Length: 151
Image (cartoon, rainbow, N blue to C red; front, side):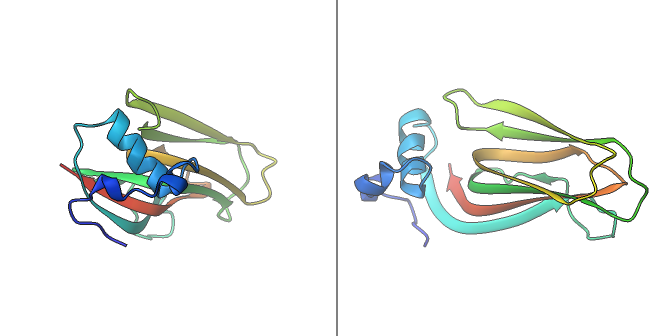
């Protein structure tokens, strides 16, 4: 579903009352970031992360004039290397605050990590970046949700 020059009066009031729905986020943006005029809302997904297998992935998701709302799924998988402790760092420029701030998320993979690990969070952001990854573990950060274009 896409809205050109989104008419924020079309926000479903009942759905806006359900925290972290698309309607809630549009109402939240209208209230907390009134300088960002919403132009369109489109379903969107992308994956960033390590390139241990020549996947051609970028390490950052950022599009000027766009925000993203939805689920971030972090997958950390052993890739056949010897198990060892390692650190993976992610930065998220979060808009789930009235003042934009950067969340620094560190995931320390311990030597005992014999199983695949997946973490999921709901986020509203305009930039996410895998700052430090590992050659010992495959790291994938998938976004599934909406791209919100603004001017």
